[in-house]
Amino acid sequence: MSIYDDDVFRMACDQFQVIADYLSINKNDRERLMYPKRAIAVTLPVHMDDGSTRTFQGYRVQHHLTLGPTKGGTRFAPSLSMGETAALAMWMSWKCALSNLPYGGAKGGVTVDPAKLSRTELERVSRRYMQEMIPFVGPHTDIMGPDMGTNEQVMAWFMDTYSVHQGYSVSEIVTGKPVAIGGTEGRREATGRGVVYLVERAMNMLKMDPEKCTAIVQGFGNVGSVAALSLAYKSGVKVIGISDAHAAIYNPKGIDIQAAEQHVFKKGTLRAFAQDNHVDPNELLTMPCDILVPAAVDRVINGKNAGQLKCRILAEAANGPTTPEADLILEKRWDEIFVIPDILCNAGGVIVSYFEWVQGLQSYLWTEMEVTDKLFRILEHSFAQVIKRAKAHKISHRTAAMAIGVERVLKAKKMRGLFP
Ligand code: NAD
Image (cartoon, rainbow, N blue to C red; front, side):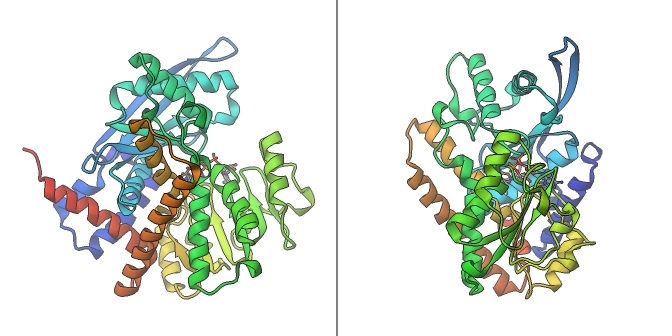
């Protein structure tokens, strides 16, 4: 389907075909499972601060409607395309199904560099995007959340715009909102916390002592910074490498992650942090460490560098960080590198978003302890299922995780039948 023509969409389809082969899914069911149910493209004319009007492109893709409403994040990024949005929506479908959440996958966003917008421009882009999406989303249709380039404030503007249109507050239209307007305790930390919970499970399985382990984290936004803080101060792992879009820092003696976080809070980037320890960002991923956490963009582990990774655990916090070519290499290195695949590793975000949605629908608030406890139970169950399946069938962790997700969606489609 040409509207999705894009490298990231092709990658998501290639990954799906591997699973469909493994599950012996027939051609008719493959196409029905793979292609998104709905794709919406909108044009956003926005007043800029200098008096001009700029026109932005926005997207929303709803991958399947079989298990409930669709659910997925909103990405503001300069390279965002319909194809990338569709790939991310497809991954959300398998991720939600793996965690047994009553959702189909979705994703959306705007082709824009949010760092180049003033706060007032960002607000106008955010509100206009939600305004254009109102006919296609709803608390029982499609629920948005944050992703790269968006945050709690953007979710608050989305919620306000939708609510003003309805005439009453509809907090359950988005997740990842500030707690002050109906967000849940523990959502901001959920993805990074979930990543570290699974890293600890893997360390335990592999009999690795966290106090003797080192970690490198690529990306220092919501997911990467929480993962690095949690690794350093909760698990006792020495974090020796961090990076963002502007700088990469490596220090074998360990990095002061709290100082890095405060620096980014004040300055917005790692650019001027620990300048004596800056390294080439392209080399950071292949430096020796026990735990490697890509927590930024897709396709950073590819056919060129997968053979050079020197980690024991690869915890895929980002969506789609590993290409299918890299997977073939990592499958041969299965006894050297323990992969926690993205749809398992970063599922904490959507799991706690689900909790936020449920609390919103019931107008009933949970404590942070309740949220985190329920999050870890779901992750524990998924982790155990993936490991069991991979061992029993001698398949990679990614194949096992995706197969569980795809099978659940296929089973639900078969049970519901095809109308008319
Ligand atoms: P974010 O916008 O908060 O942070 C992204 C970080 O990555 C920033 O530090 C940015 O500077 C950095 N970055 C961008 N390009 C980079 C590059 N080429 N090299 C190194 N660093 C780079 O985004 P986030 O919410 O932390 O999301 C990060 C990843 O995690 C994305 O792949 C996203 O889809 C995925 N994810 C996020 C959530 C969530 O709850 N936020 C949930 C699941 C998955």
